[in-house]
Image 1: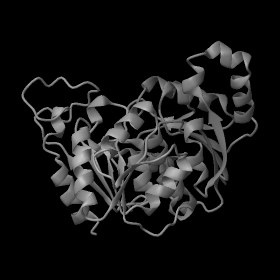
Image 2: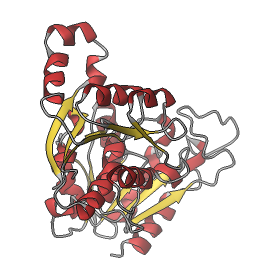
Image 3: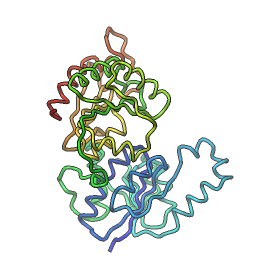
Image 4: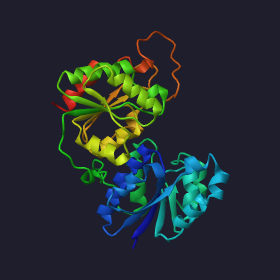
Length: 339
């Protein structure tokens, strides 16, 4: 009987959150199972919130690969390897399908499972598994991980909405606040600052307070420009992941670009309006009962490009957000969330 499994899913935040419903499924099907999880240190709190996770094994691959010899001299790799190999698992699931995750999977002790060459993002990863699983690529990322776990652990994959399993960790009374999740990695995924300002004014006129978190210097500068437009918009101080989760859990509504924190909002079952210009939510968008997507219908969207190549006339930069106006988002918030 399978009682202890290891999950390899190191990053990004959205990918880590996408894996949570599969753990909930597995725990429902196999009540005695527990999981250890290898994850990037920046996201290590997220797996720990799920009741099926016993131990979180932290890695800083993104940091160590920049200075590999320094990490080796300081014993970082050695400590990680000792932590990884300190137990033998009934099975190991590489839920990421990348070469780096496959190498971690190969180093661990136990029978190794991962996606086959037609399903993995990096087909070369399949060389390191003892068992390869086929999962359709045209399904949403959450569905794909749920299917992978069901195949590996031998139960029927539920056809139910995803249950992320962390909501009970963050229960709070809903307050009259809206959170703006404006930060993201691609320049093309950024909703224009003037749009945030106009939306904030519309919401403030309805008596709502707008909170604007940030994660780096550039995001802080943007948050300050947005908040300067109206006194009811507030830039928040630096926050750790738990504090952000607590904030998202009590918000009346959230407006998000395509960003990892948007997926956290979905996992917390908070009403969220997500804005998609150059990206397509069909495969990796937020998923949940209270999730609403505004998707650009611009001729070249979704381009899936980090730099906008459009050279025609437009009142918005990037151009694909020209039709996702503040008024449209405002109306969607009250249609979706109510007041």
